[in-house]
Image: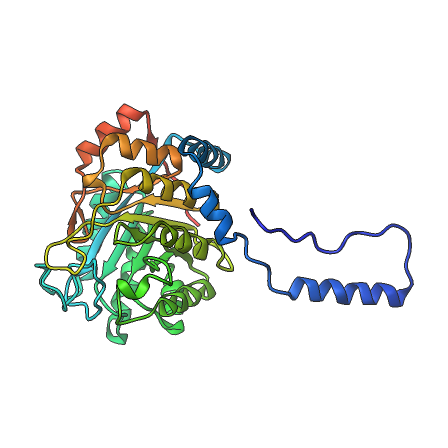
Length: 350
């Protein structure tokens, strides 16, 4: 289960000055020592494999400790630069290496992004995410990107961007512009990663997460399930996130949307119960993180989504399109919220 460190026990009575100095040095050394992993893979796997009712009971209990179980945040995602990505991620229609049917566009103008963000806010979104299909942003784009951040924040929206890999300087500039979150998913386990993408490594993704964290921005990082991976890979990528120096504040869980023309178009669909188990484990391993029910909702029944909310998911993306993929309409989401007695979650901005 969760590893803990108790530190140095307090002692009663007085101690010689030398002993106090030695004790202080020992305490400082203990503080500086790396913390042990919070979760062991075997313990997390045991949770994942637990009887379904037991797993959901525990996940829902953890969720109630930290969140209103009847509140779900509504986020909006805009593709600010679509297609033409040089990466070969097997799930992605925007890769220039695949025939996913998505043409390349140029980076949007700031005013156009703000207009879309204003419409999203007026429709009830409290979080606005902006995504560009790049390996990473170029220097010539950074001025426009930072301007977008400031303009969207001025509307009172929580901001997030996903632009590919970042250098430390990129991260620092986005942080200075006021970006709240940066999204960079690790996608799957380190073991399975090269079955999904080969143009960058799992370690490259971890490097970007470190740059984001060191800049002071919050981390949004999750993965995609249903790509042909095994259960241990779903458990492993969640354990990797939970055991970061600080777990991501935002954890999107995506269910693969098989897109014709991509290498993973024929991936077998993931069993719905396995998907709920993944959501539940994410909630238990990362109790205070926002667990985002992300891509793939068009193929989910209302009942499956209800189980995901019960298991700890507390954010969805609204709008008919999620980057380049279909998403449930806002009318459908509104009807689902009414059926389940859900209300919009409006977390305080940083």
